Length: 164
Image 1: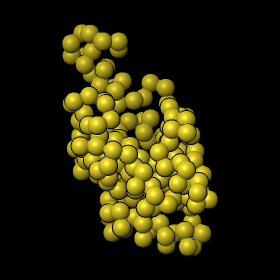
Image 2: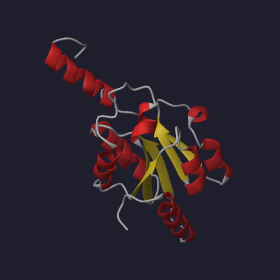
Image 3: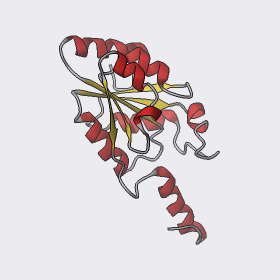
Image 4: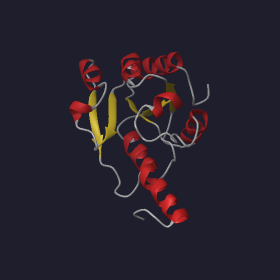
């Protein structure tokens, strides 16, 4: 089994690891242009357990997030391949829904992680994870590292406009 897997493969992996006392950590996102902020966030998430699983928005669901019509820059297969190459990442699971709620409920991870740009009340799947004894952790984001900021710097460099 490679690192990019189906929901069923991921759920089977989770159940097995949980039966032997391992902690499964889950996070999700678009991860369009992978950058230092992403890598540090994912490494910190992995440190919260034994295995890190990442739900990745497919291209259609990524476009519904209001990041702009040109996003995502990289297609889902490319984004998942890059994430799977990271040492701290154990499995990558695509999802096509607007939110990862169904995937989270299906996997039942021990730890659900999101960035500190969310509150615990805003984290999709938080109540589902807590209802099975899991926890929700918010990780501080790295100032100056976001795909939107990187794209703005690129636009500025080529047009002479923008804030960077």
